[in-house]
Image 1 (tube, rainbow, N blue to C red):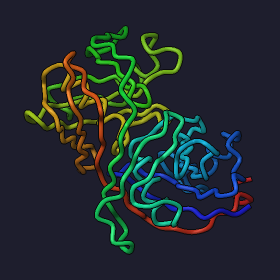
Image 2: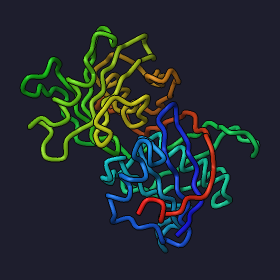
Image 3: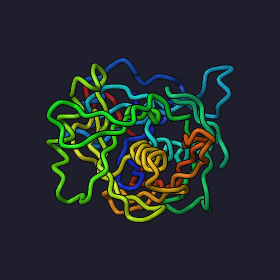
Length: 281
């Protein structure tokens, strides 16, 4: 079977995005996903998006199914969702304002400042409400206290004085696999406050099992934790390890909860082509 695909990235977070209009791509084969994303013999990415037509009554223009490179299926990816919206727009599947169905729910998206020809655009995504807040969690052996919150996928956020001094891989792996976040584990974000509306973040990503250049849901989690602990006020600009800045917009309710969240940031094509699944058999 052959499929059109695009290699894309959102703020340095890179994906293989597969167009699957006939719902033919096997979603129940994690070994295939691992082979497709393997170094040297695959397309190498930090995640894979499969775009399908929505189910009847789903109330969406397109459905995104997201896989981590280890083959596990994740409910949401903020940078991936922006890339999915941009690809759906360019493929003629959806207008600039569209509804994107994910395993974390259906959300509004808008492709901004796109003239139809360039390789990049800004995309705004309206996210599902944050949930599962635990304001102070200290896993056994961890170096920091963490603010736990689910922004489509689970995150643990630690505020640090200096990002360069953090051993992201060691501390991230410890927290990701700790009993405090069992059994599913968590993504882990290390955050420096740069100003009243500015943060910098480094993220250890579950499923990638390493630091990533950017994490959209992690940037949102960082903003939620910063706003709800009084460190920042919205909108919050979050600088990721790649160097790009993602903006998190929203409002603070009477209880101090940061909600009605919007994530705004870039999506970019690297290349487009046709892949044959037989190559990964």
